Image (cartoon, rainbow over all chains, first blue to last red; front, side, top):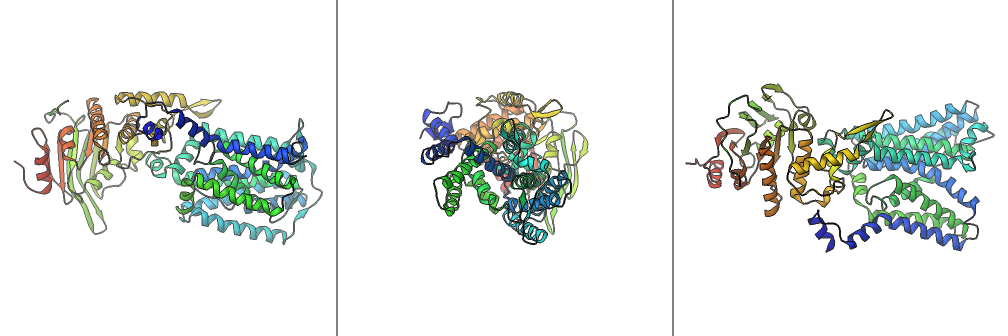
Length: 332
Length: 258
């Protein structure tokens, strides 16, 4: 009852009950994540070690980069189910070039170009050919996977690669793994773009109220293309880091990140700005997923438990914040 | 209550002129030969039954559609509107029936939607959030409305308050003409009162209002003149001084009034 009164008389300050509810809605999941962390800290002996915490952060770093891309796309109310397959393809091309002794910056640029090109293609399929992103990106994912297998003939590039390339994924800066630095930079840039620039507002408006955005003169089709292109670019960037970190690249190297990335973003939608894909939520969501994945292994859970947990997280998150997602899945 | 003043004697170039506006959709003719002038500062109602051509006419004036024939003049100069955003940038703002606001965004974001203010920091254009909040609050206070927090989502506001946000956006564009499409259709008594007061407020500030409404009492209360459409043609163009809601209904339904 306090809620409806507050809604009707907007000049009245919200009642304490409403404020508590808002706080729970915004930060409840983050608190849940801390609880998960605490449980693992108590249950697994080596969970809290500095080494293990860095291991988690390294694993989370790829996830954050991929998930940021998915966040951009979903902000414009489009789904990108192709990012993991595109990342595998980009990794294979990048790894193949490095493997065959081409300069690594060429490999990195090629990965970004492939990611960007797939993202752009996704955007054009959605806005020009009017194919729902759910279908379009599923199709391009299949194409990317096929190309990756064709390039490597089914095997993975593995080798002793240029050390300056491997540093991108394995190096340290002042004791901190460089992957953590890349992750932090990517997240900070994403927050900055979404919060402080006109582009961020336009992308949000396109996803939140496309008709209002169009009437206000915002080029909503271009924004959707941008959202999907950024997702592709993040897939390319993540592919470079993953390839450098693994020192190998196979046609399914990044496929694990599809469900994890989606789960991270959807979990993030239950935080900070509930119901809306948002960068801080995505980062925290990815951390929670990373902690879960790591902790489950350390407490000796079977490998398939993780998949079940991811599925449950996706279901619960969407149940909590469904509207944007249904819109993304079922409209053009 | 401020009675609508009769400005039919005002001289000068009309702020908006429609000359022979027609619109066909394939074989279907929605409008033919509609001509009328709108004088600066007046509140004009466009009336007619369903299918009379009101919506088509308003879509044309607001830039959502282009006419098949005829000319639109703005302060005497012929204009074409490529889109509602284009019309808005030329000073013609339309407040849509479904409001065209982004409910999950803030009041300030909505007032500046699509035309956000920026400041350059080291060459990078950043959102001038504080300035947008301040200016949004100023535009809303021009509407004599108790101004809520500019960071609140529009979905938290009442129907009348949302109209105010939409009008504040028009004011931000320094709109000279505000078109309101059925502004009270979905509102209760109290909210309708609020919106009618909003219309009178902006009219008193010299802004020209074009009102499309089914509610004759609303029209009689705020409008000085009415253009009545029927079957896509203009059938009456009359000052409303001395008219009652019943008179207006009779004319719209096809019976001549006194």
